[in-house]
Each structure stands twice: as C-alpha cells, then as structure tokens.
Image (cartoon, rainbow, N blue to C red):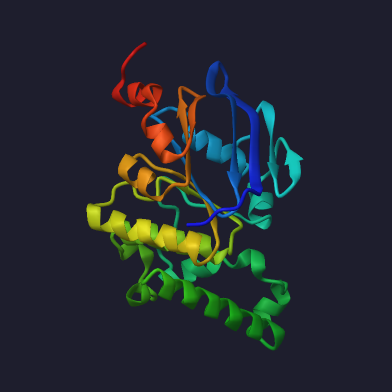
Length: 259
C-alpha cells in the first residue's frame, strides 16, 4: 500500500456540541491521498460525529475542514457527494425492495449527465449513457464478487452481503474519498476477512483514499497506514498503527483505566 504526502483532507480545530453535550472538542488531523486512515476510540468518543462533520451531516460550531484545497466550515451532504466524498453507515442504508444491481446503480446518479426528459425517453444519448453506467456497475459487481446476487432484492440478503452491496454502491460513485462507518460491524471472521480484502483492493487497485471507523483493533492494525484515536470527543493519539498501539493512554482508554 503506497501513499503520497499530498494532504487530501485537513481537519483543523473541529468542535461540535449538541446543547450542553460536547461531542467533539478541538480535534485536528489530516488524510493523505492514497492512504487508509482509521479513526478509533471507545463508544461515545465522537468518531461517527466526526465523519458526519466531514461529509456535511453535521455543521461544527468551530474549526474548519480543507478538502481538495478548498476550506470551509460547513458543507451539505449533496455537495460532499458531488465533490467526490462517498459514505457508508453503521446501519445498512439500502433500498431493501430493489435488486443489488439497482442499488448499485443509484451510486451513479451524480455521474448521469442527461436530464429527466432524456431518461424518460430512454433513447439515443441517454440509452448509451445508461449502458455505460451499467457496465461500470457490473465491473464493481465482479470486483466485489457478488455476481450471484446481482438480481436478488437486497432485503433477502444476509447482513454481511448487504454491507458488501453498500460498499459497492459507494464505490460506484468513483469517490476521491470514501468514508466507512464500521464496515465490519456484526460480521463473522470470514466476512471480516473478505471485507478487509475488498477495502485493501479498493485502496490499491482503484486508488481510493479511505477513512474508516472500526472497533476491531486487529483489523485496524493490519490495514491502516495511520490511526487517529478519539476519547470523549478529544484527540488522544495520532500516528502509525505501531505507535498508536504502544501508546499507554490509548491502552488505558480501551481498558477503561482511569488516570
């Protein structure tokens, strides 16, 4: 896994509060182009809130985020998607009555150039455009090895495969930055191994920069280039997996040791 020194996203002094509850307090870190960057920490550490700030679901009260050279405090989710930030969620957010292929096709919406009238006619340029989008989705289906379920309604699929379909939909956006919120939650060992392989392949073969939240420390240490640790909304540590794994403050936070 190779990375560059080019900073793709830079988080500076982000603070987020819900009333009197401080979810994030003055957190700063960056994500370099081509890396797998993990955010870890105990439950309630502010990890998902940070992802929500990055892609615009939450608007921080203080701090700023620089992405692709543009600095802003607030960005709406549709703007984030248009600028190449894709996202998966803790709880699977798929269209359960639609097939795997149709769910993945929804990830191509931002790339579709033709208007509603052309889509309704399904003729000429729009027909050719949809064929190209379907080819791209079929490539992702092959990439994630889900050919056998391409026509299956996702509501009938086991949880692990639903998580893979959600990853496929995010990859269909051809994202510059992919945010994964606990992509292996609820999976057995074999499913986790498969998901790890696909994340590594997306990073290596597709060149996708990835930021993920994960509780399985074995997974984090195996696939991450760098790790940032949050605890009670504050940054506790930041560095390579080896450095973070040996940090006594990190060990204490995970073991629940009070200083």
